[in-house]
Amino acid sequence: MNPVTFLKNVSKEMKKVSWPTGKELYRYTIVTVLTVVFAAIFFGLVDLGISEILNLFF
Image 1 (cartoon, one colour):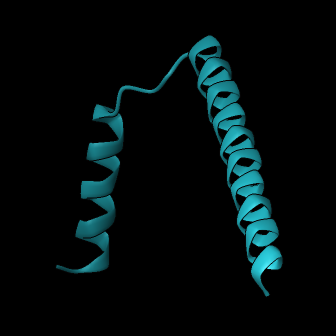
Image 2: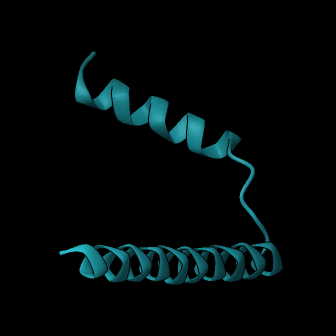
């Protein structure tokens, strides 16, 4: 497939995409950021706990 045909097909497909509204985008962004923060805190605490347990033995 040549580049021009590819770009035409990409353009057609992009027109079919259902884009979120501004309000939906805001909500999805907040949910994503909170999920990442929660996961980072959770795994940080798990890592800290495992480190402390290992320090008791070594």
